[in-house]
Image (cartoon, rainbow, N blue to C red):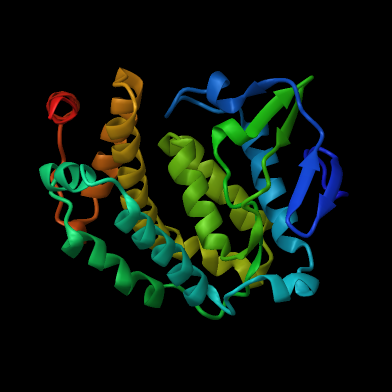
Length: 259
């Protein structure tokens, strides 16, 4: 990691912590609104960093991971999410019921790990590649906040990034094309499993924004983000959720916050 370009220098590290140089600049979230065109050079830099990290030899870190393959990695993520659902406040089930999300919806997740390739090796991933973790400073794009970095499934890394970035169709096609050119053959199958992880991430993200809206003051921007997550979840028929309009979501959220 120390020799990767576009990564802030690590200042100190220990068994359970690390610190990196502070980077002053503008996040990509402040530069690019959702679904607006992104500079090809930025997409190319993102792809190169993903691939460079995935290529790092990680054999010396195997003892620090509780999974041995992609299926076990996926199950770990799902179990964390289900545990978090059980810990949520007593008001959240009312919100879930209002939007047609019950434990039968969550049970769909149980089938997903079997659908990802077990032949693809695990590799190093950032684990949290969203626009607020990418900072442009003096013309250079930096990738920050590596605390979720681990040995994991590259398909998860790609799915989470795509979900968070909200690429438009043209930019998404370019992002995937760049990956096909640069990924080593042994990792190319990750591209085939992105959609499986997207199903899980869509549901997890809906639950995350539901909690934010329930616990925090109402804002139109957060509600719009929640709507986009609900819209994405509705694309997957196995979840059997309704595709609400933005106005329906706003009305329902305001009513739920008053209860």
